[in-house]
Length: 396
Image 1 (cartoon, helix red, strand yellow):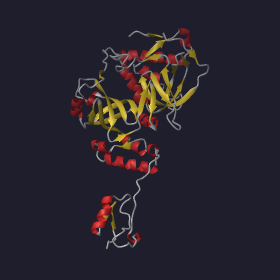
Image 2 (image 1 turned 90 degrees about the vertical axis):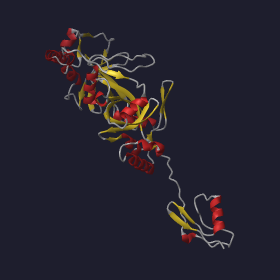
Image 3 (image 1 turned 180 degrees about the vertical axis):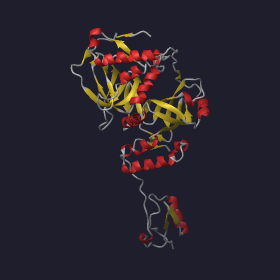
Image 4 (image 1 turned 60 degrees about the vertical axis):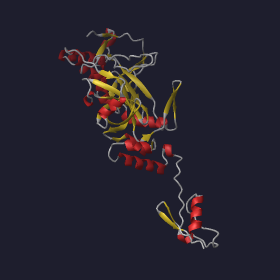
């Protein structure tokens, strides 16, 4: 495979190298990493860092309005992305910004952990044969120790036939971006645990995932891209108008809550229903059930008619309990929650009445005409209100 020539637009170097700490939110490709700050009173700012001096190729992109067929995948691009995803997503890293292009692209180094003594991600990729080192001007290259390490690592990977340097022909993924017959697909995989990777979080309770080949009865190396909405709950909505995000109250918080816990994580999904092109189901993570967590933090509410779809044993009842606790604490979407008022009447509070004229006592918070007539005509009545019984005074 031929070496790459560095033909990027002229970048301006940063005068002094500054290192930052952050949490890896997402890996777009093996050499492109989205890093966010820690959240303070809401979703935090983020940066996209491109690893300096290497290239991993580009993963496939789904069809869009501008590109109706999508974009193909470069050999070993998916393997490189998966290597970095499993290594970094959700973890703290130390990173630098070495150069920045006029377009805003930032290039630098990323290290696992809190300082530069941690694993150099670019170097690890090259060692595994999952990245190719870009050519630099010899004078510049001679002064760059990290670049020299990359070149040495690439020569070793080549000699061992690793990754892209293997004599075997590369195999790229087959991707089914859209399921034509969603009903048939649902019937084939209904309530079966399906291994998946979350690729996008649309809002607090809706995600898009790649279902992995080992869970499917499809052609080998076939990935299926589907949208899954969590059963039994609803989080605040997020709409897009004129290219801008228009969230409901607490919508961005719900999005970040799910995104920070599920984006690019390995999950298990259970398909429990289907509506048009969207599947409804449960999304399970080794650390717990995200739907229950959303409810517990007041970032979603139960949908009663939808709860019967939840197939995880005991989950529906757990959802109700989590929602009730959030209501009691008036958390987020329940900040204005007011419990239903119930009026209780005790026997000793009943008053003497004028015979045949007045009934004294509260049968319910809002007595109906039927109840009043019933009492007037039949004299004695036993009314049950919230499992408490009220004995009415006899009418003479």
